[in-house]
Image 1: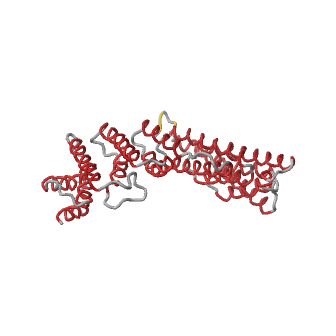
Image 2 (image 1 turned 120 degrees about the vertical axis):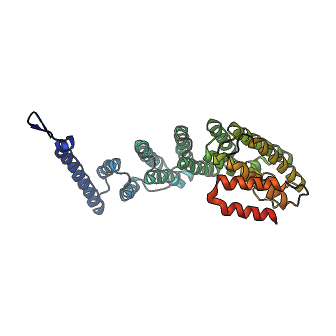
Length: 369
Protein backbone atom coordinates (compact mmCIF):
# COMPACT_ATOMS: atom_id res chain seq x y z
CA UNK A 1 0.00 0.00 0.00
CA UNK A 2 1.34 3.44 -0.95
CA UNK A 3 0.87 6.84 0.66
CA UNK A 4 1.10 10.08 -1.35
CA UNK A 5 2.58 8.09 -4.21
CA UNK A 6 5.53 6.82 -2.08
CA UNK A 7 5.65 3.02 -1.57
CA UNK A 8 6.06 1.89 2.02
CA UNK A 9 9.04 -0.32 2.81
CA UNK A 10 8.97 -2.46 5.93
CA UNK A 11 11.60 -1.73 8.53
CA UNK A 12 13.02 -5.22 8.27
CA UNK A 13 13.49 -4.92 4.48
CA UNK A 14 14.99 -1.46 4.81
CA UNK A 15 17.61 -2.59 7.31
CA UNK A 16 18.09 -6.20 6.26
CA UNK A 17 21.06 -5.38 4.05
CA UNK A 18 23.22 -3.55 6.63
CA UNK A 19 22.32 -5.97 9.41
CA UNK A 20 23.09 -8.97 7.23
CA UNK A 21 26.43 -7.53 6.17
CA UNK A 22 27.35 -6.81 9.77
CA UNK A 23 26.47 -10.33 10.90
CA UNK A 24 28.32 -11.82 7.95
CA UNK A 25 31.47 -9.91 8.90
CA UNK A 26 31.18 -11.22 12.46
CA UNK A 27 30.87 -14.78 11.21
CA UNK A 28 33.84 -14.43 8.89
CA UNK A 29 35.95 -12.85 11.64
CA UNK A 30 34.98 -15.65 14.01
CA UNK A 31 35.88 -18.37 11.51
CA UNK A 32 39.19 -16.70 10.74
CA UNK A 33 39.99 -16.52 14.47
CA UNK A 34 39.18 -20.21 14.93
CA UNK A 35 41.37 -21.17 11.95
CA UNK A 36 44.26 -19.01 13.18
CA UNK A 37 44.21 -20.58 16.66
CA UNK A 38 43.98 -24.14 15.36
CA UNK A 39 46.82 -23.61 12.88
CA UNK A 40 49.11 -22.08 15.50
CA UNK A 41 48.35 -24.85 18.00
CA UNK A 42 49.12 -27.52 15.41
CA UNK A 43 52.44 -25.79 14.79
CA UNK A 44 53.20 -25.79 18.51
CA UNK A 45 53.25 -22.00 18.77
CA UNK A 46 52.60 -21.80 22.51
CA UNK A 47 52.91 -18.04 22.96
CA UNK A 48 51.21 -15.16 24.75
CA UNK A 49 49.83 -14.10 21.38
CA UNK A 50 47.93 -17.38 20.98
CA UNK A 51 46.73 -17.16 24.59
CA UNK A 52 45.33 -13.71 23.79
CA UNK A 53 43.60 -15.11 20.70
CA UNK A 54 41.91 -17.81 22.78
CA UNK A 55 40.75 -15.08 25.15
CA UNK A 56 39.09 -13.23 22.26
CA UNK A 57 37.40 -16.38 21.02
CA UNK A 58 36.15 -17.56 24.41
CA UNK A 59 34.68 -14.15 25.16
CA UNK A 60 32.49 -14.67 22.10
CA UNK A 61 31.80 -18.40 22.43
CA UNK A 62 32.67 -20.04 25.78
CA UNK A 63 30.94 -23.26 24.68
CA UNK A 64 33.86 -24.10 22.36
CA UNK A 65 35.43 -26.71 24.65
CA UNK A 66 38.36 -27.45 22.31
CA UNK A 67 39.64 -23.92 22.84
CA UNK A 68 39.51 -24.40 26.60
CA UNK A 69 41.78 -27.43 26.10
CA UNK A 70 44.09 -25.30 23.94
CA UNK A 71 44.25 -22.81 26.79
CA UNK A 72 45.18 -25.55 29.25
CA UNK A 73 48.04 -26.68 27.02
CA UNK A 74 49.25 -23.10 26.64
CA UNK A 75 49.30 -22.43 30.37
CA UNK A 76 51.06 -25.68 31.14
CA UNK A 77 53.75 -24.73 28.64
CA UNK A 78 54.21 -21.41 30.48
CA UNK A 79 54.46 -23.02 33.93
CA UNK A 80 58.04 -23.59 35.11
CA UNK A 81 59.13 -27.16 35.77
CA UNK A 82 58.64 -28.45 39.30
CA UNK A 83 55.91 -28.86 41.83
CA UNK A 84 55.08 -27.68 45.31
CA UNK A 85 57.20 -30.50 46.76
CA UNK A 86 60.27 -28.53 45.71
CA UNK A 87 59.39 -25.79 48.16
CA UNK A 88 58.13 -28.24 50.77
CA UNK A 89 61.56 -29.91 50.60
CA UNK A 90 63.41 -26.61 50.87
CA UNK A 91 63.48 -25.10 47.39
CA UNK A 92 65.88 -22.45 46.14
CA UNK A 93 65.04 -18.77 45.53
CA UNK A 94 64.73 -19.61 41.81
CA UNK A 95 62.03 -22.14 42.70
CA UNK A 96 60.17 -19.49 44.67
CA UNK A 97 60.22 -17.02 41.77
CA UNK A 98 58.90 -19.81 39.52
CA UNK A 99 56.02 -20.42 41.90
CA UNK A 100 55.25 -16.71 41.91
CA UNK A 101 54.96 -16.82 38.12
CA UNK A 102 52.60 -19.83 38.27
CA UNK A 103 50.52 -18.13 40.94
CA UNK A 104 50.18 -15.01 38.80
CA UNK A 105 49.16 -16.99 35.71
CA UNK A 106 46.46 -18.75 37.74
CA UNK A 107 45.20 -15.56 39.36
CA UNK A 108 45.08 -13.74 36.01
CA UNK A 109 43.10 -16.56 34.41
CA UNK A 110 40.69 -16.74 37.35
CA UNK A 111 40.09 -13.01 36.93
CA UNK A 112 39.54 -13.49 33.18
CA UNK A 113 36.75 -15.97 33.93
CA UNK A 114 34.70 -13.69 36.20
CA UNK A 115 33.06 -11.58 33.45
CA UNK A 116 32.35 -14.77 31.52
CA UNK A 117 30.63 -16.32 34.54
CA UNK A 118 28.43 -13.24 34.92
CA UNK A 119 27.47 -13.37 31.25
CA UNK A 120 27.24 -17.18 30.90
CA UNK A 121 26.54 -18.49 34.44
CA UNK A 122 25.29 -21.88 33.22
CA UNK A 123 28.19 -22.68 30.88
CA UNK A 124 29.76 -25.86 32.27
CA UNK A 125 33.01 -25.39 30.34
CA UNK A 126 33.78 -22.19 32.25
CA UNK A 127 33.21 -23.89 35.61
CA UNK A 128 35.21 -26.97 34.56
CA UNK A 129 38.13 -24.82 33.47
CA UNK A 130 37.95 -22.81 36.71
CA UNK A 131 38.19 -26.00 38.76
CA UNK A 132 41.14 -27.09 36.63
CA UNK A 133 42.95 -23.84 37.44
CA UNK A 134 42.27 -24.32 41.14
CA UNK A 135 43.51 -27.91 40.99
CA UNK A 136 46.68 -26.68 39.27
CA UNK A 137 47.22 -24.37 42.23
CA UNK A 138 47.25 -27.39 44.54
CA UNK A 139 49.55 -29.32 42.22
CA UNK A 140 52.08 -26.58 41.57
CA UNK A 141 52.02 -24.15 44.50
CA UNK A 142 52.97 -24.44 48.18
CA UNK A 143 49.97 -25.49 50.25
CA UNK A 144 49.73 -22.11 51.97
CA UNK A 145 49.47 -20.30 48.63
CA UNK A 146 47.00 -22.84 47.24
CA UNK A 147 44.86 -22.56 50.38
CA UNK A 148 44.73 -18.78 49.98
CA UNK A 149 43.45 -19.09 46.40
CA UNK A 150 40.81 -21.67 47.32
CA UNK A 151 39.74 -19.58 50.34
CA UNK A 152 39.07 -16.64 48.01
CA UNK A 153 37.03 -19.00 45.84
CA UNK A 154 34.82 -19.79 48.84
CA UNK A 155 34.17 -16.06 49.21
CA UNK A 156 33.28 -15.87 45.52
CA UNK A 157 30.77 -18.71 45.67
CA UNK A 158 29.28 -17.14 48.80
CA UNK A 159 28.64 -13.94 46.86
CA UNK A 160 27.17 -15.95 44.00
CA UNK A 161 24.72 -17.72 46.32
CA UNK A 162 23.77 -14.42 47.94
CA UNK A 163 22.57 -13.32 44.49
CA UNK A 164 20.84 -16.61 43.68
CA UNK A 165 20.47 -18.58 46.91
CA UNK A 166 18.70 -21.57 45.31
CA UNK A 167 21.19 -22.14 42.49
CA UNK A 168 21.94 -25.86 42.87
CA UNK A 169 24.98 -25.52 40.57
CA UNK A 170 26.39 -23.00 43.04
CA UNK A 171 25.69 -25.28 46.00
CA UNK A 172 27.43 -28.18 44.28
CA UNK A 173 30.42 -25.95 43.53
CA UNK A 174 30.50 -24.80 47.15
CA UNK A 175 30.61 -28.42 48.37
CA UNK A 176 33.62 -29.03 46.14
CA UNK A 177 35.41 -25.90 47.37
CA UNK A 178 34.77 -26.69 51.05
CA UNK A 179 35.87 -30.30 50.63
CA UNK A 180 39.10 -29.25 48.94
CA UNK A 181 39.83 -26.58 51.54
CA UNK A 182 39.52 -29.20 54.27
CA UNK A 183 41.92 -31.50 52.39
CA UNK A 184 44.45 -28.71 51.93
CA UNK A 185 44.17 -27.66 55.57
CA UNK A 186 44.68 -31.24 56.75
CA UNK A 187 47.73 -31.57 54.50
CA UNK A 188 49.28 -28.40 55.88
CA UNK A 189 48.16 -28.97 59.47
CA UNK A 190 46.72 -32.39 60.45
CA UNK A 191 45.19 -30.88 63.61
CA UNK A 192 43.25 -28.20 61.71
CA UNK A 193 39.55 -27.82 62.47
CA UNK A 194 36.86 -29.17 60.16
CA UNK A 195 34.61 -26.70 58.34
CA UNK A 196 31.50 -28.77 59.14
CA UNK A 197 30.31 -26.52 61.95
CA UNK A 198 30.75 -23.37 59.85
CA UNK A 199 28.95 -24.94 56.88
CA UNK A 200 26.06 -26.06 59.10
CA UNK A 201 25.71 -22.50 60.38
CA UNK A 202 25.80 -21.29 56.78
CA UNK A 203 22.81 -23.50 55.92
CA UNK A 204 20.94 -21.99 58.89
CA UNK A 205 21.65 -18.50 57.58
CA UNK A 206 20.51 -19.37 54.05
CA UNK A 207 17.34 -21.10 55.29
CA UNK A 208 16.43 -18.13 57.43
CA UNK A 209 16.71 -15.86 54.40
CA UNK A 210 14.64 -18.21 52.20
CA UNK A 211 12.66 -21.13 53.63
CA UNK A 212 12.17 -22.61 50.16
CA UNK A 213 15.89 -23.19 49.64
CA UNK A 214 15.89 -26.91 48.79
CA UNK A 215 19.68 -26.98 48.35
CA UNK A 216 20.25 -25.53 51.81
CA UNK A 217 17.92 -28.08 53.46
CA UNK A 218 19.58 -30.91 51.51
CA UNK A 219 23.07 -29.72 52.42
CA UNK A 220 21.99 -29.51 56.07
CA UNK A 221 20.76 -33.13 56.04
CA UNK A 222 24.12 -34.30 54.66
CA UNK A 223 26.12 -32.31 57.21
CA UNK A 224 24.25 -33.47 60.33
CA UNK A 225 25.75 -36.99 60.70
CA UNK A 226 29.26 -35.59 60.35
CA UNK A 227 28.47 -32.66 62.64
CA UNK A 228 27.27 -34.90 65.47
CA UNK A 229 30.28 -37.17 65.02
CA UNK A 230 32.67 -34.19 65.18
CA UNK A 231 30.91 -32.98 68.33
CA UNK A 232 31.16 -36.49 69.79
CA UNK A 233 27.55 -35.92 70.84
CA UNK A 234 26.03 -38.09 73.55
CA UNK A 235 22.55 -39.67 73.27
CA UNK A 236 21.04 -36.83 75.29
CA UNK A 237 22.76 -34.21 73.13
CA UNK A 238 21.57 -35.95 69.97
CA UNK A 239 18.00 -36.04 71.29
CA UNK A 240 18.16 -32.34 72.09
CA UNK A 241 19.53 -31.67 68.61
CA UNK A 242 16.68 -33.62 66.97
CA UNK A 243 14.11 -31.68 69.01
CA UNK A 244 15.69 -28.40 67.87
CA UNK A 245 15.56 -29.51 64.23
CA UNK A 246 11.91 -30.49 64.57
CA UNK A 247 11.27 -27.07 66.09
CA UNK A 248 12.97 -25.40 63.12
CA UNK A 249 11.00 -27.31 60.48
CA UNK A 250 7.72 -26.99 62.37
CA UNK A 251 8.08 -23.21 62.48
CA UNK A 252 8.83 -23.21 58.76
CA UNK A 253 5.80 -25.38 57.96
CA UNK A 254 3.46 -23.36 60.16
CA UNK A 255 4.56 -20.18 58.39
CA UNK A 256 2.46 -21.41 55.45
CA UNK A 257 0.72 -24.70 56.33
CA UNK A 258 -1.15 -24.79 53.01
CA UNK A 259 2.13 -24.65 51.09
CA UNK A 260 3.15 -27.51 48.80
CA UNK A 261 6.81 -26.48 49.10
CA UNK A 262 8.63 -29.77 48.63
CA UNK A 263 11.87 -28.50 50.20
CA UNK A 264 10.28 -28.23 53.66
CA UNK A 265 8.53 -31.59 53.43
CA UNK A 266 11.72 -33.21 52.17
CA UNK A 267 13.51 -32.16 55.35
CA UNK A 268 10.58 -33.22 57.51
CA UNK A 269 10.75 -36.66 55.90
CA UNK A 270 14.48 -36.79 56.62
CA UNK A 271 13.82 -36.10 60.30
CA UNK A 272 11.04 -38.68 60.72
CA UNK A 273 13.23 -41.30 59.01
CA UNK A 274 14.90 -41.57 62.43
CA UNK A 275 11.81 -43.47 63.59
CA UNK A 276 12.14 -46.34 61.11
CA UNK A 277 12.24 -49.75 62.85
CA UNK A 278 15.81 -50.38 61.64
CA UNK A 279 18.30 -47.68 62.61
CA UNK A 280 20.29 -46.09 59.80
CA UNK A 281 24.03 -45.55 60.29
CA UNK A 282 23.46 -41.84 59.62
CA UNK A 283 20.53 -41.52 62.03
CA UNK A 284 20.54 -38.59 64.38
CA UNK A 285 19.45 -40.95 67.17
CA UNK A 286 20.72 -44.44 66.26
CA UNK A 287 20.04 -45.84 69.75
CA UNK A 288 16.47 -44.58 70.05
CA UNK A 289 14.22 -47.18 71.68
CA UNK A 290 11.00 -48.38 70.05
CA UNK A 291 9.02 -46.78 72.86
CA UNK A 292 10.68 -43.39 72.28
CA UNK A 293 10.17 -43.72 68.52
CA UNK A 294 6.45 -44.29 69.05
CA UNK A 295 6.29 -41.27 71.34
CA UNK A 296 7.83 -39.10 68.65
CA UNK A 297 5.47 -40.57 66.01
CA UNK A 298 2.38 -39.82 68.08
CA UNK A 299 3.55 -36.26 68.68
CA UNK A 300 4.18 -35.71 64.98
CA UNK A 301 0.78 -37.12 63.99
CA UNK A 302 -0.95 -34.82 66.48
CA UNK A 303 0.98 -31.79 65.17
CA UNK A 304 0.17 -32.63 61.55
CA UNK A 305 -3.51 -33.12 62.33
CA UNK A 306 -3.54 -29.65 63.90
CA UNK A 307 -1.80 -28.26 60.83
CA UNK A 308 -4.40 -29.92 58.58
CA UNK A 309 -7.11 -27.57 59.79
CA UNK A 310 -7.27 -24.86 57.16
CA UNK A 311 -4.70 -26.62 54.96
CA UNK A 312 -6.88 -29.38 53.52
CA UNK A 313 -5.43 -28.91 50.02
CA UNK A 314 -1.83 -29.70 51.03
CA UNK A 315 -1.20 -33.26 49.90
CA UNK A 316 2.09 -33.49 51.80
CA UNK A 317 0.33 -33.46 55.18
CA UNK A 318 -1.77 -36.50 54.25
CA UNK A 319 1.25 -38.27 52.80
CA UNK A 320 3.33 -37.66 55.90
CA UNK A 321 0.48 -38.81 58.18
CA UNK A 322 0.35 -42.09 56.28
CA UNK A 323 4.15 -42.46 56.44
CA UNK A 324 4.00 -42.09 60.21
CA UNK A 325 1.08 -44.53 60.46
CA UNK A 326 3.10 -47.16 58.58
CA UNK A 327 6.08 -46.58 60.88
CA UNK A 328 3.84 -47.01 63.92
CA UNK A 329 2.50 -50.28 62.54
CA UNK A 330 6.02 -51.53 61.73
CA UNK A 331 6.99 -50.94 65.35
CA UNK A 332 4.12 -53.26 66.40
CA UNK A 333 2.39 -50.54 68.33
CA UNK A 334 -0.79 -51.35 70.26
CA UNK A 335 -1.93 -47.84 69.46
CA UNK A 336 -4.09 -47.93 66.37
CA UNK A 337 -5.04 -44.99 64.18
CA UNK A 338 -8.79 -45.08 63.44
CA UNK A 339 -9.40 -46.74 60.08
CA UNK A 340 -11.77 -43.90 59.19
CA UNK A 341 -8.85 -41.44 59.47
CA UNK A 342 -6.61 -43.62 57.30
CA UNK A 343 -9.28 -43.96 54.63
CA UNK A 344 -9.96 -40.21 54.73
CA UNK A 345 -6.26 -39.40 54.24
CA UNK A 346 -5.92 -41.80 51.30
CA UNK A 347 -9.12 -40.48 49.71
CA UNK A 348 -7.82 -36.91 50.02
CA UNK A 349 -4.50 -37.89 48.43
CA UNK A 350 -6.29 -39.60 45.56
CA UNK A 351 -8.36 -36.47 44.99
CA UNK A 352 -5.41 -34.04 45.23
CA UNK A 353 -2.93 -36.18 43.26
CA UNK A 354 -4.91 -38.48 40.93
CA UNK A 355 -1.88 -39.20 38.72
CA UNK A 356 -0.47 -41.32 41.57
CA UNK A 357 -3.71 -43.15 42.21
CA UNK A 358 -1.96 -46.53 41.92
CA UNK A 359 0.48 -45.55 44.65
CA UNK A 360 -2.31 -44.46 46.99
CA UNK A 361 -4.19 -47.71 46.35
CA UNK A 362 -1.01 -49.59 47.23
CA UNK A 363 -0.84 -47.64 50.48
CA UNK A 364 -4.44 -48.60 51.18
CA UNK A 365 -3.59 -52.28 50.70
CA UNK A 366 -0.65 -51.95 53.10
CA UNK A 367 -2.93 -50.47 55.72
CA UNK A 368 -5.41 -53.33 55.31
CA UNK A 369 -2.84 -56.05 56.00
